[in-house]
Length: 290
Image (cartoon, rainbow, N blue to C red; front, side, top):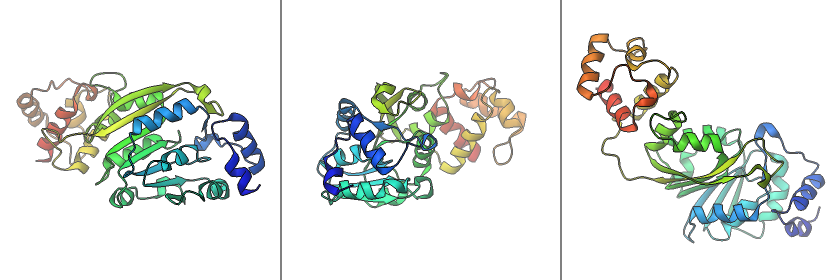
């Protein structure tokens, strides 16, 4: 397959995507969440949502055949794209050769330290996140010491719902709280499965997360905060009093201590984890840590 032919392919055309995959002898791997975007309108919405400027440096996770990568590189100063499947390497190198501002990394993103990218000057994450790793990638970003200014990702609608969920709703949980520490979140567009090839079994959504102003209170120990919330939401149907009275160190407290603490904070000891707001969780973690 010649470089000229590779670069002539329209990557939002289902026929051209099938042609490329056939010539490469590849079939999308479901376990890796390989679903290729074939809708130019949705591609445009992703770019508009990302609000790119000529000075932006962007990280993309899951290059696939490069349709979003190339679109990002037409505006951004620098685009670093990570693709796990080495079978796409030659194709992508050929496609990207005329665009020197694209850096291709063939690697498993879950084995990389994403903090190094933010520290290198990358200020935005824009990606059609592979379904298989989307939640884990975002959780790692939330827990890291440094983070991008903006995240615009396409991922399963149910994961997007959890990230944007409010207190005391069915979708409210760890992702809502962890993301809320650093970002304000909104779902910008729900996407039909027909916009991808092969067609996924679930709806997707474009999610935008903007780094928020500092909260009125911050966790005094982020590691403690993440550990506490993870432990509590692992038993989200139990009451807070029972969760913490039987928790392992350093989260456990006596029933008497908990009653006094909850009373002073205005927390109902019978409340369940999903009933506490982000601010309450920060307050509780700081009290327990102190």
